[in-house]
Amino acid sequence: MGKTTSFMPGWLRATLSFILIFLVGVMTPNAVISSWLKAQITDTSNFVEMTTTAIDNPAVESYISEEVSSIIIKSIDIDALASDLFNGLDEALPLGDKASAALSLLEKPLVNGAKSMITDVTEKVIKSDAFDNVTEKVLTISHQQIMALLRGDNSGAIVADDKGVIGIQIGPIVDAVKEQLVSQGIGLADRIPKVNAVVEIGKVDGLVQARIALGALDAAGYWLPIIVLVMLIAGVLLARQRARATVWAGIAVVIGTGLALSGISVGRYAFLASVSPDILPGPAANVIFTALTERLQQLMIATLVIGLLVAITAYLVGPFRGAEVIRSAVTDTAGSVRSIAEDKGLTTGKFGEFVERAHAWIIGAILGVTALVLFMLRPFSVSGAVWAAIIALVLVLVVQLVRRPEVGSQTAAASKTGAASKTAVADKSEKPKPSKKAKTKA
Image (cartoon, rainbow, N blue to C red; front, side):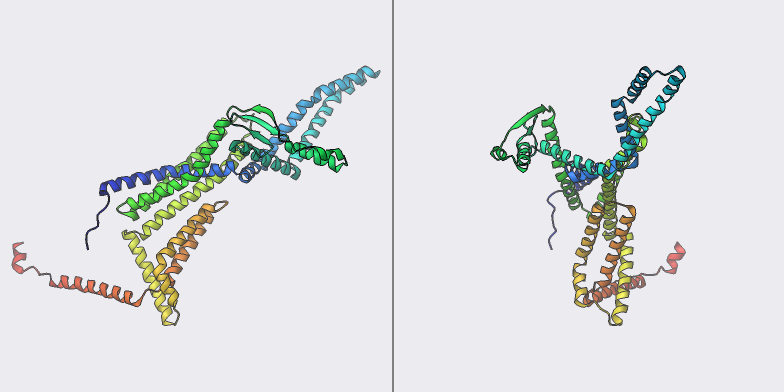
């Protein structure tokens, strides 16, 4: 057989492989973040779920309730109303000094009672199911309209042109009014024509830049994970020792993702430290940050676990001494179990022969499905990842037990091992023994 030649020198392949694997470790967190941003920001259901999760938390509900009740109390100015009321009563009624003093004592309890009533009612409204429904509906409509504006979709009620001028299409409004008039029996309403007009309501200077940013986010969220995967495959294929390169690729993903997770933890403390308690209480700020980053953390942890599984799997199938010992132990154990079962008449037959021929692909599919399950697991948990890894390991062991190596290959392997052992013994026995004169000279 002729010697195969490579299309590029070995040192160049090794260098390119190292660079690609290094970039995979650096870009994997960016790919996860961009994919998460695309899913959370551009998808209405994900955005509404993330926002309502934060709003439904008791700490955030209390904060909203306090803010709303405070705004209502300030807008009504209960103190001024109570003061005017009691001053008017004092002037209108012929009260003596004692009665007037006693009446003034009621002013403060009345004000506090009114404020307390407003606070209680506001809190009940904020914590009610009706408020949750209204909040979800408002968020859904608002997000859909904002996304329509940013994507240049002018089929909704709110539209915008390329210069950032925003307007309202009055056609749907006219149709709604026409329908209402017709339902009330006003026959002339049928003559209302179809209207296609836009009323300008303002201009947003940064709309064009926002549309460009959204387009970049869409592209990055879709293409960056694919680019990272292609770089990973190319880095492994270029390596002279592909199993070792795959191990290092998995380690690079683990390191890069671990650093990104540490960055999220640091960002939490920085966010909480930067927010003034007078503006946003600490518990509410913590809940909001958690709601915004929880799914991102889950994706990061899933990616880290996948990288770890890739590294471990590549090591176990690679030409490493420890891996060979483990594989030999598993193969010998599975062979012993198969032999015992076949002695008792239990055999996998043709199916076992098929598994033997395709066992590498089957194991690869098991590992691929496990990685996909880990990436799609919501909510992600360490216990769920452990169970997924255990199930994958059990399935791999089942494959080893079910596979049925051909008798010829087993015999050839055994004879080869026996021949190697006999050769080693023969070499040892034929080795000349040192003579007594050589020993004396030594």
